[in-house]
Every structure is written in structure tokens, then in C-alpha cells.
Length: 207
Length: 207
DNA sequence: GAGGTTTTGTAGCGATCACTAGGAAACCAT
DNA sequence: ATGGTTTCCTAGTGATCGCTACAAAACCTC
Image (cartoon, rainbow over all chains, first blue to last red; front, top):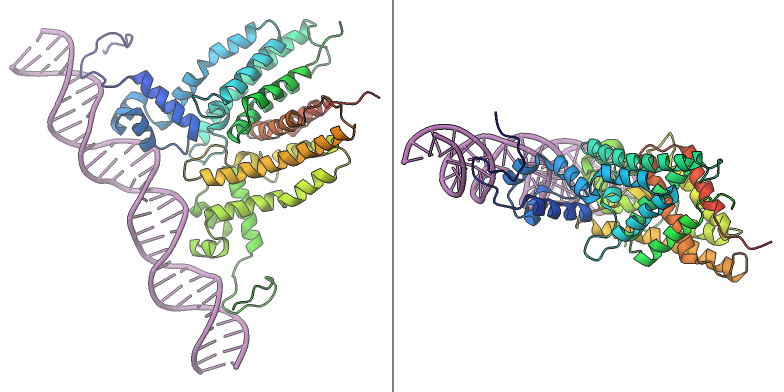
């Protein structure tokens, strides 16, 4: 039976000749820039500095490499959902998400737009399953925000007539849309202005 | 010198064996469903009922067929911009765009989402020029809405402190985002609820 | 060292990509 | 009928797609 210990322990056989994390990071940036389908294995091996067999041995296949890159991009889906749940108010959670999206969409050391929002929007039938995996992540984060909003409604922080599904949907439509705006050339200032407008319309309880 | 008369006039040579408009319509729906890059010439010829040489003779190449399909989808870019300019108020123009997007994203006789918003979000370097053509159309419609908003500000219909770029940007972020939400499974009711929320936050002059 | 294990690069698998050469077929005008 | 013109289908082009068989190389334990 083979050892399943952490990667820090010495294993038998020839050691990896490349930094797995660095290679994954390079792959993430390439998927970020060109999306899932338009990024070829040849493109990936070039920027990762490895050959195809090394890529497949280390990451499985293109689909699993992409999904692992998405996890690295998000910093863990669990962490995001936990941050939403633990925010002081739903307003804070929504603002944090929107600001993080606006900033992430317009970094000068990374491609414009959001990897989660823009790397697999339309897909061939072969990539439909991968697209659905991404859609599930998007819906999961939206559901976490919606649950946080529903809690604020129950606790009287938001008006009882508020529609949590619509509020969360609006936030996510803007998050998705800002990614395309950024790819189309919109500035960080513009996106942050949109965020301010969205949050200014957030429902408030009468003082 | 060859005649450049309308297509209704009889021309010399073997006549077209297929309905060009119907073929373009089929191509449009396929691009709509799978996007530009994931739709192959083989896929297109299959649904259009023609062979590759006929496709190339009638439409040029894949890029031009796609851009012609986009024009057909929009019903003419000029018509859209004219409708925005001639709307009674910027509020009406924005609402019309948002409602049309929400309805178009959730038709039961067509793929979910918007061809303009979702068919070419991320691209390979070869398709970058086509992507830029789409981005130019998106920016052009947004600029028309922005100009309509600026007119309302000048005419006192909107408060003088309103930011036309942010207002138009917000509307377009939601339009882009709703397309992805629809592809991820959002209902027409949900999208129309988001539209109502966006328009409810539209700035108003004090009565 | 020997034997076992894992990674390495080379080289190439069959399938698909966008696109087209070439000649038969179907129309027009004369 | 005949010549001119245009479209038709067949059958491919070279390039690239995701992915892998294979054997040499580099490590471990013993």
C-alpha cells in the first residue's frame, strides 16, 4: 500500500523537476486570459515549462487542471462562503463581493475580467460538463449571499418585504457583467462607481 | 462589369439551392447556443443544410458569417441606437433595453442568454479581432444610452449630479450579467425582478 | 551496487480544425 | 444547341486538438 502522506515527505522514485504550485499559477493566468476552451495543452505546457506527460501526470487532464486553477483563483470556495456567512450584515457581504470583483477585474498584473465569470460562458457540447461545474460554483456563492440576506430580513436588519433572491441576483448580475465590461476596456474607477450605485440602492430599514 | 443589383433580379449562372436567410438564421441559433469559437464549420454546415464550399461562397468565412449573424440577431445596430435616441426619456430607453434583454435571455424557442453578450467573452489570440468587433458593438450601444442619459441631465429630467457613465455602465453590467445568469438557469421572473430593482434605483428629480 | 518506483522527453496517436482545389451540374443569354 | 457564369458536391489540404505509449533517467530502499 502506498503512502498518502503530505507532499513534504520524501517518496520513492524520481522527484518532480518543477514547482507544482508555480506551474498551476501559470496555468491559472493563461485560463484567466483566454478562457478554458481557447487555451490548448500546447499553450499550457509552454507557460508552465513542462511537457504534456508531466502535465497529465501532475494534474490529470485539462478539465481537472482548470478546475484546480479555479479553486486556486478563488482561494477556496469554502472560505468565500464562510466569509459571506460571517459578514456583519448582508450589506457588508454584498459590498465586499462587489468591491473584490471590481478590483480583481482590473489588476495591472493580471488579465482583465474574472476567471470564474468569464472563462467558460459559452461552450461546446464536450465542455458542457466543465461549464456546469463553473455554473455550480457561481450558483453556490450566490446562494450563500442569498442566505445571508434572508438572515438579515429575519433579524429585521433588512425590510421584511425585501426579496432575497432578487437582491442576490442583482449583485451577481453586476459581478458577472463587470467582468465583461473590464474585458471590453472599462476602468477600475468606472467599476467602483457602478458598485457604489448598486450599494446605494440597497434597501434600508427606516431609522 | 457585373451587375450589383438587388438579389431579387435574375442573375446568370446556377441559382442558389438554399434559402440564404434561413441558413443564416440556423447559423445564428447555433452561434447563440455554443458561441463563436466552439461552433465549428462542420456544425454549421450540418444545421444550415449546405456543404462547406457553399457556406464560404455565400458568407465569406466563419468570422463574417458570425458578424452577419450578430447583425441579424440585433436587427441592425443602427435601429437599436436610433430607438435609444428617440425614447421619451433615458429611463424609458434603459428599461426597454433591460426588459428586452431579460426576455431575450429566457425564450423557450431559443438558447438561454444573449448572443451579443455571451458568444465571445474569452477568446484565443486568433479570435481576438472578432471579440473586439463584438466589444465595439457593446460599447457603441452603451455609448448611445450614455448620450441619451446626458441629454436628460442637460434638460433637467435627471438630477444635475447624475453620472451618465456610471448609470449606463450599471445598466450594461446587468445586461451582460443577466445573460450568464440565464445560461446558469435563472428564470425569466427572476431576471425581470432584477430589472425592476435596477430601474427602481434610477435617479429622480424632486417633484 | 541491485531492484523498485516515479518522472522525464520524444514522438506520435486518431480526430477535428478552418478552409479550398477541381470538375460536374444547372442556370442565363444568344 | 452553345458559350458564359455561377453553384454544386467530393475529397481533400496542412495544422492543431487532447492525450498517451515508450523507454531512458533519476530518485528511493535494501
